[in-house]
Image 1 (cartoon, rainbow, N blue to C red):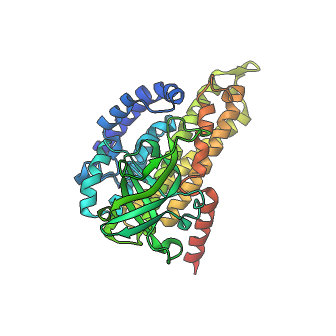
Image 2: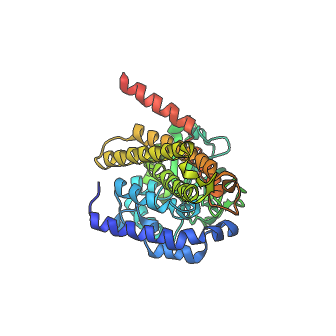
Image 3: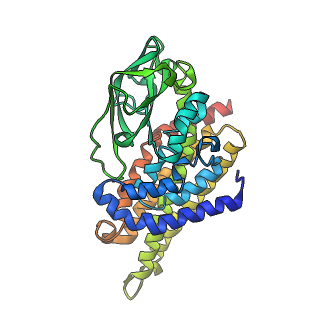
Length: 384
């Protein structure tokens, strides 16, 4: 649902201009420094990029699902690190509060996330609880008006720079799986919370990821999201159902950029006396890329409109994330092929970096295999 087309058009024009004039010229700078510089972060804050999905009453733009994915398609046409810098605030780092937070919690934390003065993250995954997220072992024991958290989280995007952690922990050890899990907001300066050194990763330079550790970390009971125990996994599924749609859109932007780069290369490079784009096998790769990009965009927009209409999109969100992330990987592979040796060498093109960066899309927010199982399960359930 698009509420105000002229207003959205102004936002999209701003994002396109920013990607072209600020982000793309600074991609190598970010890759070399392995961080998004403060001046660029400040610019994103000033433009309101951190608060896209946060309701207007808490300082955000309150974008609908359709508006959010449309903007994400534009913002993601540059190095992934830029989108990741704001992405936890517009997604998994704020959505638990937006979906289920108490009014007091929303007023305490959402304005800072919306402005970008706070950076949020979601601390869900553990070393032994990845795809099987309900197997998490981090504990939260009630002690008066506090909860004492103990345990560790792994592979947490933006953890090294986060000010606010949405943490899933087990409050009832006697309830197995998802039933005994609660969600908390934990502030960075809480004694007992530490983050590890950023991982050395395959790609996405500039997007810090690390472990998070809790050692007798006392969190006020007022920071229990929603004020009720053992509801954390239900909250998490609300977060992920929306974020999977958002992430699907974020897979399409890099695919568009890679295809544009490849077309620029094959139309300018000549072999055997003519442009490489004249060769039919190259044209076949272009056609496959363009077709899949259009299909992914159509899936995402249709699902966003359905979500805005208040309908359940659990199945469709999983389909979108699965298809768009796999599509992006295929486009990356074809782009390298169209560039030839230049696509393998970082000195010659951005394609080498994108090829590594987009590999993660098929792993986080549910692996492709988990989504295949989810899609089949929901489809079979609907057939009964």
